[in-house]
Image (cartoon, rainbow, N blue to C red; front, side):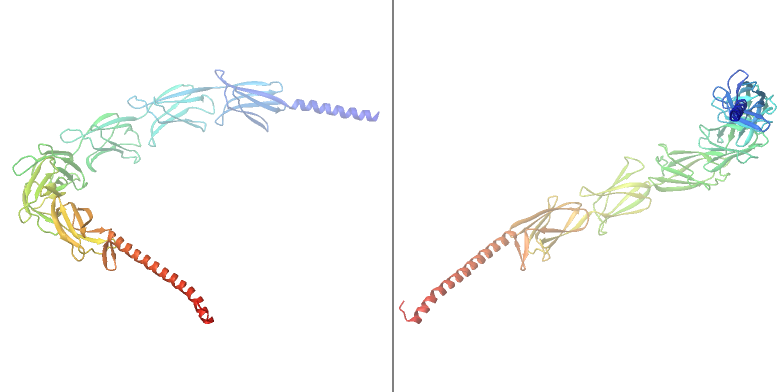
Length: 587
């Protein structure tokens, strides 16, 4: 009986523990929705009571599940960026499910400039004035930005919102709003500028750099180049902003400041900037007043040594535009005139306010030049025909002939020319020269070219007694026996082919063509001639000699062999005879 009683007590104890454990392991379900009943996903829900605190993120249907809860009343808190935006209570085990509503609203922002144009790509910053959280969105092509599911400002932890947009670190718009407002249009203090730069005659400047810089904020500095005379600046912060103030506006051409002004901008406008730029017209003529075309005019000033470049037209005129006045840092101008890259004239000029568009006439006179033509030895070349082609005027040519002293006189404009020299009707030289002095020497002309030809055998030894013939264009330049050193000399009238034939012993040994374009020494190798024992033999003669030697050698060998055989035979005959005589027997 005692044992049964003990077992019954243990069983009752286990049943009591099971009932208690079942009472402690409760589960609660919290669903978070907005005022339209839309489930709130990934929202933090806090369940707390006393020292117990549990956290859960809502699932895709807005539910948060809390397990292992003991009986009691729990506080329910819904968080947004760590701020409580909704509260409630749930009592366990009496309540299993609780719905909590949060008040949220989408906020649409439209950002415009002072002209009502959308502002693209700007960051809009939304900050709760009570809660410590900030949201940022970037405007799209239409100037729009959307903040989704923003808590109502009426929530104690949230309060009003502050909206802010910055440009280059400068606040260009700021506003305070209260949600549930859903659409807000912000007008940023941003304006547009079209700055048109003109010269002193009102002509648009197409190659200027325009700078716009705040006098208060150094980082606010804008630069544009002119197109069709205008530089366009968009979204420029207004001068009324405390951090902006007036702007310094200046323009440069060729690194020279030609306009500079300080002023404020509080509205978009077309702004005209009259620059200190003039125009220079230059007409280039010869000594008779006739225009010279294709003269290159390069311009330099004290700031830029390569300020500009242009070429005279068929009327000899060149117009140099957008030239800073000499009253600027440009100072006086230096003009360099070239023809075919050869400097033919240089002059200086100043542009002033009283004369911003001067017209100048520049005269370039012809020069009388003596052209000396010389060969490779430095000797004058007489009766040579010279042709000068003006590289600055295609098709324009000048001809002359050298005298017995090798000199020709030409009168022409200075510049670059291609000079062609012909001798006996053949072109012997063509090169580009600069005609800018009264004397010009053309040296190294390929005429009367000395040629030395050396005839050698297969071993490189001079062949003596060979007969040579050298012709050039059908003209015989040499005919006869070569010297003891195997050589002969010829003078080739101009560059071309020298044909040389060589005979030895009445037999033609070689015919070779030598291309001559300068003084030269050439070797002709007679491979068929072989030096032997101080003699120079042809291959045929050498073969005959070798054949004779071979025959003689073979015959001698045969004689020696027969002699040896006969000697051996005689010795065999003599031995028996000698033995018989000693024995006294008759043969």
